[in-house]
Image (tube, rainbow, N blue to C red):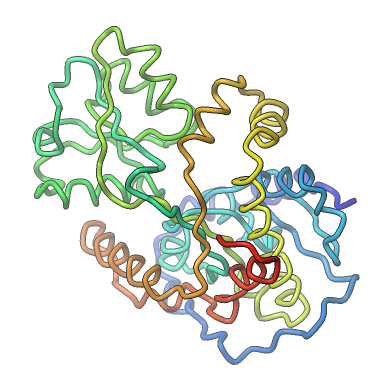
Length: 352
């Protein structure tokens, strides 16, 4: 069975910490390689190895009985998300990672050449948002327009930070109309900052929404809907990996397993609650059921045109607000893999 190389990855990340913390985007001119003409091997050699940072995918493949069917070696790194995966990519310790849409944008600006190789969204994204806007007790915020003059938690380089900028744009506000308070959106930092009235508003997601309202609701804590799409989920790969013919073939196979796993999760909510949220993550069954209900149903498109258009809008907004150079969103996507996920589902008679 595939092994876990978290210790090796962790050591590599430690050595890269100062480098990634100080990246200023000066290397961005060297990234964005056109890989459309690069070859992908027809079949995968069983000797091929990928290091993959997607802990949730690993559990889904174990629970669905698919993990031993992967026709190459996978070293599962216990990391996901933008900051940790970026560091691992820079260290050469990771091939593929699970992340949202923002990390690839920031990687481009900091000179790290990566590609998005798979895309999943929600079929009803406005009814099933990832985040809600948490409101501190006594903040007096009932609509997005009420954010004027308020302190808002902000994490540059992360999906929550981009969402804050999009919320301000929707409300007709600018950064000058509010006070952005930089906080890393890890663990329960945002809910705690809200509960302590360190900030008036912050995007919170997952079980933190439920826990925040349970802990501070009696004091007047609330959440409001932002009404924006915040649902991108990607497999994100190092460009050096997708330009290696054998690794590219392995990534193609991994995407097919990933797509089937996403649908398996949707079709087996009880097994997922018990196997992942309760046994792997240590959450209560109630919390797991809450998260499954929030998740909605997956949409794995065979055509990324609309996704790339939305990514372009995000790039343009971040470039404007963060004073970065705008660039074409196409360079972030490796469209050789565009049909793979949907085709894998169609082959099994499944609809994403």
